[in-house]
Image (cartoon, rainbow, N blue to C red; front, side, top):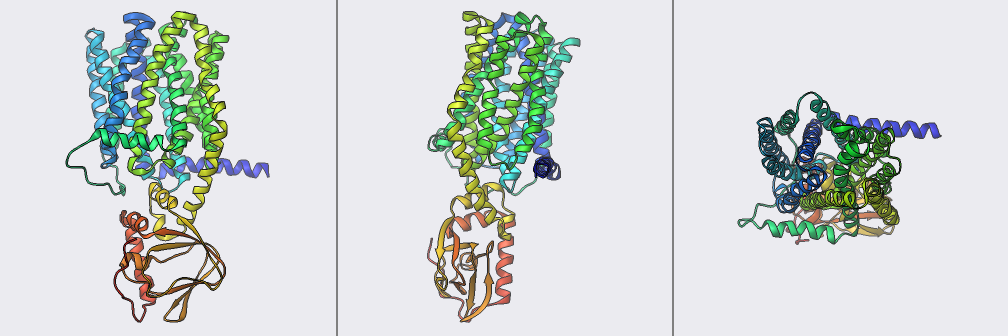
Amino acid sequence: MGADRSQSRLGQAAAAFSSNARNPNLRRAQLSFLGAWTAEWAFTVALGIVAYRDGGAAALGLVGLLRMVPSAILAPLLSPLADRGRRERVLILVSTARGLATAAAAVVAAVAGPPMVIYALAVLSTIAATLYRPAHSALLPSLCHTGYELASANVVRGLLDSAATLVGPLLAAVLLQFTGVDVVFAVAAASSFWAAGLLVRLRYDAPPRPPAPSRSNLFGEAAEGIRAVTQNRDLTLILGLAAAQALTRGALTVLSVVVAIELLGTGEPGVGALMAAVGVGAVLGSLAASLLVGTGRLGAWFAVGVGLWGLPIALVGLVPQESAALGLLAFVGVGNALIDVAGFTLIGRMAPDEVLARVFGVLESLVTVFIGLGAIVASVMVGWVGVQAALVWIGLVCPVLAAASWRRLRTLDRSVVTRDLGAVLLQRVAMFRALPLPAVEQLARGLNAITVAEGEVVFRQGDLGYRYYLIESGEADVLGDGRVIATLGPGEGFGEIALLRRTRRTATVVGRSELRLQALDSGRFLSVVLGYSLSAREAEAVVDDMLGRYRPDDPSGGPPAPS
């Protein structure tokens, strides 16, 4: 039995990767992410070298803060743009802008221009990078149809993020060994342009969006994203732990340079080696995380990932040796992979699609702020208590918070499993199978359980239609003009004709046995089914087929009342 379970897990892991490879839209979106984040990590290493040459550890911390503050302010204000239209267009725009800023930094570095100009360009590049992840994270659910597929997409993106964490610093280290920071900036710019080009040919059924307001109010729209977070305890917890991880990440951008040069004596190439160790662990962690798809324990694994972002850093402070540091920082990469898979999947499942980019914008803003704060905190603590003590104290933050949040995250896991049951029931019906995950989640949140006794009437022919029904258990007879014309069982639905054609009920439905139904109100049903071209066509085909087989003697008594 244990062998069978292992084979099942391996099969799920393989399916997680193959589903992304088979879907051309997911494939393009994922490769674009790889290009964008390879550029980010290579750029970060090169910028760190420029700042350290300019003013040591203090300059590193200050540049980190100055780089993050503008993007932290603008991320939640600009993220509503990704909720207004097609999200890949935002990704193309920000990748192009980032490529131009990074290319300009390469020119300044090549001519030995002033570091302040490079810092200013770094701010512009970071603002663009800050907008990329919220739009990409909000795009992925629209390219998926099930929670399993979204988790698989986040596994693959986590692996690509991990690969970028490895390739970016490693590439920077190699280039720094033989060339200079100008070449690193140039390669990062090319990677950003590649990320933009991949998304030009993206084709998918985008969810319906409300028309853009005549008078733009980005502050008000951004506030809706903040309210979506603060009104949901689970979202608040996930984002709070992500902020703690970002604090540690920001500290690591300073500590990696100081540890390599001052504590380990490995010089500037050692900075890239330490961050590459994080990347190696992240790649291995992402491969392991593929085994977690479908486990129903994403909240628990998110807590483990948060803990791993800090504990190895604390241990580096206790064992300041190069081999130990490289091995320990690899576990930080494992934690990063777990956070990517579990955290982004949970947020994508919990937040409404209409504000999803704004919720991810809030996350990105928090991450950006706390990365900057972490850089400052690390710089101050290195000067105050020394490198080793700073490593220990900063490294303890995430493990302590993860342990304190464990019980709440396990409760969250159970609630997601319950919602999955509703989504599985919905997707047994043909017209719902074509819907992307956000639409299925919207329907699942509106399901209301109803119990119908044997022989009890659900609705009568000629009644007004207010609801669509799904059979969870039991059987129902469909009667037209007094005769049984069909018997329905678990996984089948009824009631769509009156809602889609705005006519009265064309038949009577009676419980053949005790029925457990899940009901959807007409407003939610129609807005979702008719909002997507594929589901709308499938629904019309189903209705035409039903009416082709049976039409009531008196089909009309006027349109149904509004739900």
